Structures are given as C-alpha cells and as structure tokens.
Length: 134
Image (cartoon, rainbow, N blue to C red; front, top):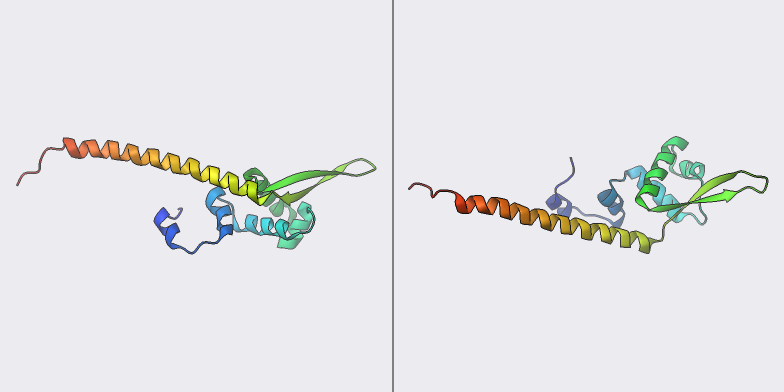
C-alpha cells in the first residue's frame, strides 16, 4: 500500500525518489537511469544490463518503463551493411522537470477538486443533521 501523504512528507527524500513517486518506477529503473546519465555515450540494453548486473531481459523491461515515463530516449543506429540496433540516452533534465511539474499541477488541481467535493458532501450532512438530544 502506498505511503500516505503525511508519511511521505515526514520522510527524508532525495530528488531521485521522484522517479518512484511520480511514475511508480522501481529501484532497478532508477539504477538503469543513473547508468545512462553517467555514461559518456548512449548505451545499448546489453551495456546497461552489464552495468547494473542483471539479465538482458530484466534490464530491457526497466528501459521500457523509463521510455514510457519519458526519462530516456531511444535512437536507432544503422549498420553500413544494413540492419540496425538501438541505443538509449537520458532525456534532457529540464524537459523531465517540466513534465513532472505539469503532472504535479494536474494532481494538485485534482486534489483541490476532491477536497471541495468532500467539503460539499460532508458539510451538507453536518448542517442537515438533527440536533443532538441533551
């Protein structure tokens, strides 16, 4: 079960925790992301798997989650003789931050709407309840 908001606010968090908080990504996803950030050049799935000491298929699933969340980009590299392979690189941190800010703003607006609905629903009950007998 996810931590409550008050529990999350009491915890010491680091900026990398936003991967899990905003997108539900896993520790392995974070390790793969950090591997790509630290690399001088884009990496293949095999290279990422080697760096995080996991099977290729496991690293591939993490890479797919990072792609879906928009944290990394996929590029196709063509062989001169024909054929191709893919490499991955991190998305510009400014774009990621903008996307997270937009998601946070959407969440904030939705929570404000739900709080208003809560107040309307339960505030009416309180006002319409018969007075308690003394």
